[in-house]
Length: 173
Image (cartoon, rainbow, N blue to C red; front, top):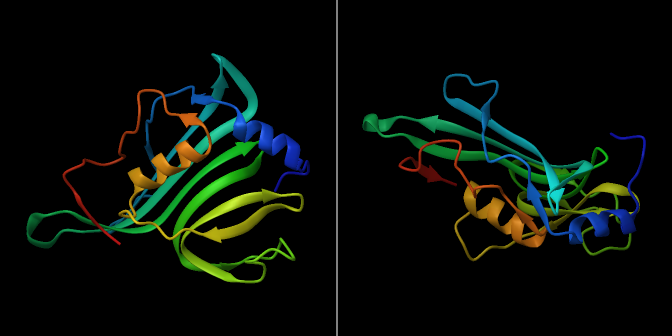
């Protein structure tokens, strides 16, 4: 956790800016083991072709992979998409199987509630952590989550979305 806490005004300013990633999507495989794969993508962000110090976009994807009858099937385990400013995660959309509790945001509707599945994290004066559920009318997958995040956070990915794995693979929730 960062020692410096971004103010609401600073977070809102960073989120409202029209941004573009400095690098195209080039996923790195990390900690891959049999039956599981992890991919990460991280890049700085720029505004009007100027890189903004301390502002970056980070995506992480983890899935379990099965190979029945020579087909590859992915079951999404964790999808994390976030915008960081001065090492603070000021906005995020996550899909996960593990539960976590809203420990900040006293007085807000979801304070104290436990979350898993698809949810959005918003920045509060207390910092990072407050989650709000997302009930989509679309298929939950990496591409749709990244596209939603980019729309909500005024972010364009240089050369567009690129999957960390081949598109022919099947994915299951």
